[in-house]
Amino acid sequence: MKKFIASMYLSEKKAIRSITDQTVISEDPVALAVSYAEADIDAILVFDLSYNDQTHDDAILLIKQIADSVGVPVYGSGNIKRMEDVKKLLYAGCQKAYLNLNKDSSFEILEEVSKKFGRDKIGGTFRSTDQIPQDTADVDVYMDELLCLDELGVKKAFSMTKLPLIANLPEISLDKTLEYLEMEQISGITGRQVSANIKEIDSIKKIAVERGIDVHQFAPTMPFSEFKLGENGLVTVVVQDYRSNEVLMVAYMNEEAYVKTCKTGRMHYYSRSRKSLWLKGETSGHFQYLKGLSVDCDNDTLLAKVKQVGAACHTGNYSCFYRDLIEMVNEDVDNPLTVFENVMNVIKDRKIHPKEGSYTNYLFDKGIDKILKKLGEEATEIVIAAKNPNPEEVKYEISDFLYHCMVLMVEKGVTWEDITEDLAKR
Image (cartoon, rainbow, N blue to C red):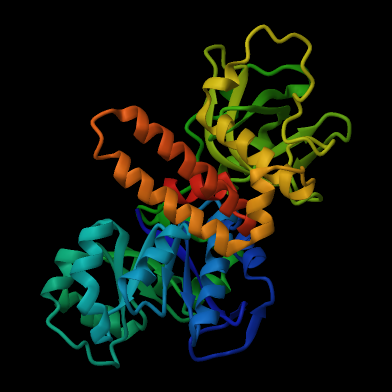
């Protein structure tokens, strides 16, 4: 399917018009990305135009926030000099990293990053006016898509490679845009032509379909009409944390809420009291990002698995179901994530409310150097214990290591959610 890709250029924590035009188009790149994602585009391509290590780290953090805030794939490019830069982009949530093929440094790491992260995670960009430093044979082997940064580059690429091509287009006519999309090797378009017509993407896609062009169009796998509705034409939605499976809340959707949820990747509901559509988190910032949507056997209840930002409940509790009426068994004991969170919460409490004689408070009082020293010692103990054929000693030492690791996490403001989120991307 042909892709419509919005492009964004980051410079000093702002979104600017292009690589050559420094005009600021948004002081809030995350909000801009969210508006793009709601406009029926298929992906967002973010260029990092940073000029030193600090601005590079700032850009990576922004890209992570963008990836966390939109329901469409994010691609990353710009300022890729070594494998570590590719890793940062992918771990920040980018589905793919695009290397600049006009630079020797890209070819120096191309094979390495392709083998480590997978060919499907690597793409390339090139500009026809610049010299491509090496033979392009490696390109087809180690990446799966090429982004041509100018129109002339598209024509040049046809003779260079058989890879699918994304065309970076200036503002051109609709007919010429459709001509590009009709080219077999063109896998999508991006650039000013997409940005300038961001609110018309849905209409352009419909015209493309009428011309027989295979483009991605939003369509839920089950239309709303197939649901068995309750009062006022609404379907019940049970909302669940996608990591822990904890039930967060119960809400309702009408057809508009269902369509917007599936289209944007952010949970929309219908408020029975206000009799209106509402975007969860619109006023509180506690958004819910859709990770999966299922329907029950009777077609009358939806199960939404979400990534919850902040608290799901208006009371400030993470879940609306925070009051136990009957508790026959504590099944949380066997939930690893719950165990980690419980221990972490105790460590956090010790930091806020010191307890005399507490070893945890001793570590916090001694500071980061002491915490790091203990962490290094515990890591060494694991290595020594692993030489022992009895696994019990290894379990004990790993538990010690994880405890000290959690002390470090609290000291540095890192949560288990941060860690599991990062691991899930690897």
